Amino acid sequence: MTGSVLVVDDDPHILEVLEMRLAAMGLDVTATRDPVDALCILGERGFDVALFDLRMEPLDGIALTRAAHEKQSRLPVLIMTAHGTIDNAVQAIKEGAFDFITKPFVSEELSGKLARALSERRWARDRDLLRGVGETLASSGVVEHVLQVVAERTMEATETERAVVFLRGGGALRPRASAGASPAPLAELAGAAHAAIAGCAPVVVRGAAGRLTLAAPLLVDGAAEGALVAENPSYVVATADDLALLAVFAAHAAVALKNAREQSRLRGGALAALGRVATQVAHELNNPLGGLKLYAGLLQDRLRKVGDDQGVEMALKVDRALAHLGDLASDITAYGRPPELRQEPVGVNTLVEECLDLAEDRIATRGVRVVRELHDTVREVRLDAREIRKAVLNLMLNGVDAMESGGTLTVRTRPLDGGRIEIAVEDTGCGMDEETRTRMFELFFTTKPNGTGLGMAITRSVVDLHGGRLDVESAPGRGTRVRIELPAT
Ligand SMILES: Nc1ncnc2c1ncn2[C@@H]1O[C@H](COP(=O)(O)OP(=O)(O)OP(=O)(O)O)[C@@H](O)[C@H]1O
Ligand SMILES: [Mg+2]
Image (cartoon, rainbow, N blue to C red; front, top):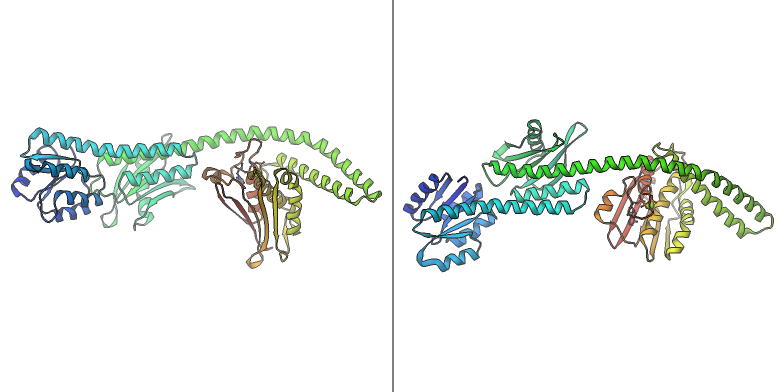
């Protein structure tokens, strides 16, 4: 039998006998007559199992079990009791003791119950582990999310103060997910991570102030891509078991990483294929679009001649919509080549109105109410109107799409400090769940049957090119607000 055991009994003879017997079984024994002293020891180091006498002063075995579990929640405790006190022993089990042993001890009973308690402890851990694994698998494939779950479950199952996942990136090791808190500097943990990566195996590192750090490498296809680090576990000596547990969690993080890579590789392939189709379609669109544009122009001329102002206005709208379609077609053909910005002073409110015009059709079919909060003091800003229009229009259409059964689309412009301006598009639609929130900027990520999933990717790249910021707030069932902040020009 291997493991560490804490024995507390106020009878020195029993204590001595037990110490000998337990040591003979191969256990690492710590014995004390004083339950208060026992609590101090439990505060300093962890044990695999504990044996407490029932009748003790000033803390009896039940009270000591309770206090011990505050320090080490999963410590299996065996209560030792004389024949006459079975009722109390039953009470002890209700209070969280694992089992009881009657005095005088029968050798087989003692070793049998200890062995069971030790395996129970392992089992309790495995159960935690499995729960963590199951939950992680059930959660999304978003790598950040999975890594966070791994960090949290690691902390829980290894009874540590902090767990951090480090990944390699750009030649350095960076923390990508973290759970818990501890005073140790991150650099110390990174040191342990480096050691695990260098040796391609789990390691134990003793840091400043005797703090213990366990690290296991994240092996993806045989190469260490990072490490999972658990810091200051409640045990002073880390067993092979503890390291094995950490390695299992690390393996899980590695699977998440591998899956994420695989997905992006597949998406890359799909992207290329889709890109080829899109380019062909866009090319095919160009000719009829040219024709339509010509007719719209002719129609406009005729209507102007007969003085039909309303008709002219409509023809103009057709013309603008066609221009937008033409732009879209050339965008698709040019995707991947970042556009050269053609910046010129543009009235932001006018631009927003143009976008609303372009979205008008879809707004009307959905029965969406539009609220304009366009600030008068928003002046002209230097920007590429074509690009920003594309971005804002996508936000509006996304908002409308999110409101299947109507709602309110609020479009806001306002000046910010230092000449910056804000354009906000807000809807009262379905909102986004966590997975959608993390993936919406991915190229070709869409939840719509007819979506292309290009909108948000383009929107962000346009805003980035302008040196602006994009900020999304969204909650399922409550709607979404997207803000574009453009710098002063
Ligand atoms: N306002 C919003 N409310 C709810 N979900 C949104 C909103 N905006 C974006 N999304 C989610 O993000 C996904 C990606 O949006 P994106 O604009 O990139 O693509 P799309 O709208 O699906 O297709 P398209 O390329 O035609 O714009 C959407 O499919 C949707 O799930
Ligand atoms: Mg969209």
